[in-house]
Length: 287
Image: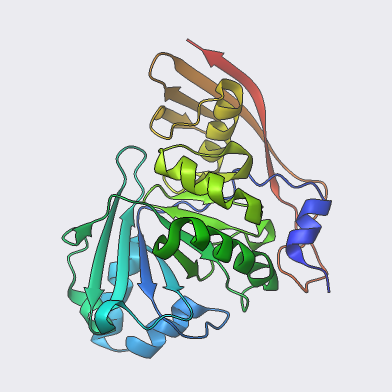
């Protein structure tokens, strides 16, 4: 079998600009074995198709990315309750709220901005083996290593996208995606995240940006060496030109975008690859 993560590395595919774009995340504790489409399985079980509850759930989650999370070996929830986290990964001042519910039906009536405000980061490591075997093969060792550093702030997560870049993870509330992470990176990830900084070599993107904006941020940080997440603000954006305002200077990033001539295996076990978008830097002007 061809493993997607191995093939992506062999093709020297860049992992920046591969993060998802989302306004909000909801991470729901569900200590079950996840099938290939775990979020659909969860919704079908607790909010069956055709019911008013399902209609309400679909509206609630229409602008949210649903992540299922678990910490195997622990009992479900805090004092028997189910942990739920809601994050708003805005570019500046992202927020994270925690809730503890008795039943999943309570999700339909929560005010997602009236939970307990969490000041410390949450780490979601993709270990979703039914989605792609690389997620478990590479994600489980990272999960254990990161737990040694950050303890209960680390959760196993369902599919976050980009499993060919395994091990992958999502940091909340920043919405920062990392990929091709080694176990040895765990301490640095925790340290830098606590300081409000990012690690560019692991960067896949941030949820507040589109793909080309993620590419622009990547090249901006490569050029400047600045890792503080709040240092730059995106003030203008059009394909494929982005203007960022820094603490001192304004930066104009111009990109080129093409589809790759080579093809990469996106899902482990497949035999047909797909072309992928490639973003390259044309210019960086600092004003």
